[in-house]
Image 1 (tube, rainbow, N blue to C red):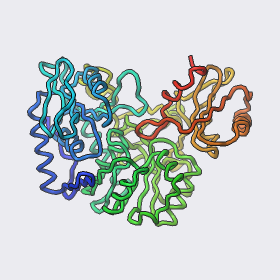
Image 2 (cartoon, rainbow, N blue to C red; image 1 turned 180 degrees about the vertical axis):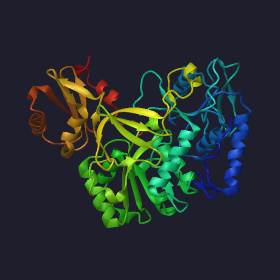
Image 3 (cartoon, rainbow, N blue to C red; image 1 turned 45 degrees about the vertical axis):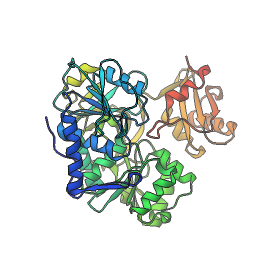
Image 4 (cartoon, helix red, strand yellow; image 1 turned 45 degrees about the horizontal axis):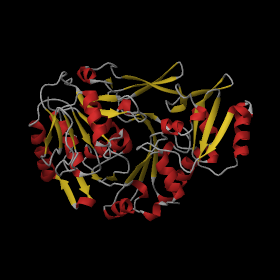
Length: 464
């Protein structure tokens, strides 16, 4: 059940906080050490608390090479949360609970402690009811998943093909140095890791993101050449009045994980031009391993608002307004329980994204909304993504449906009456159909996207 490696010759992992760097034979020895520890366990899928540290990355790489399915979970997940995941998906083990040290918490019923520093976790004793499918390599939770457990099932071919395609589209080679600016359990953050390792490049394992002084020290000390961000990352950089000259080794900016406001696209395109950088706007979903399209940096000016063309090996189509993606990086399907881990490929390389869009005559994709993001204002259907786009100039906003109205949550100090007037003009609907709420900061998921479910729960007056 083994698999090929994700690590090309010359690839390096640098962990500034740990004072360690691994490359070549040293990296191979460490991966093999963790593979040996995994091979001691009875067969079955495992979960791993995944932080930007060597122990987490080595567990991921070792699991991939042994063919053992691995679920990546947030590093701050509580023992109760990971125990619930183990039960929900019938996992063999939960790893990374001690971060390379002894596990401190007692295991739940049916599990024992494994103190091997390479694993540090709980291991289930006895037989599993389900044997994972041979093609299953990776389990990732979807970006907005809350409540009932749901994961995306990915094959090793999907992970590898996406890494290679991204490397080709962005021109990643052995000279690149990428810091981990996004969580590794998030598909975009993971693809930064895999796309650089498969190209023989360097990945610098940084915690804290762009608000951390330690992150920027690592960028400068290790000569980082690229920075990956979601819209919230670029909103933060804009608020910090960041300029490329502060970090002169950076030469590439990439953005995915949601729509970046046109104002910020223009601002960072200007900064890129002034600083001699390239800015790539991309579009992806966890269900496609990570990224599906790339807008080449040289087309940013003449295609503002587009998310680009399909990555190498992929193909886009529009079916009744919905974006459909075809490619080897499409998931096998979803998993909601142990039995789903035994399933093979249910989609055959075709993903109905749930996003609405159009293709121009050059094959560039323009997203226009989301099928499920629809509210009603006194019986009239309103696309909530369009509501948010209509307020691009206001600042970070989030729109939610609430009975027969739309509630707009805003971080901006813009006058409420001006915001309402703009919505009335844009949608030709009664003013009473919109409600504006001010918040100090919109709640965010670990990947930087707005946490709509948490936001909705803050004001039960507008939900039932």
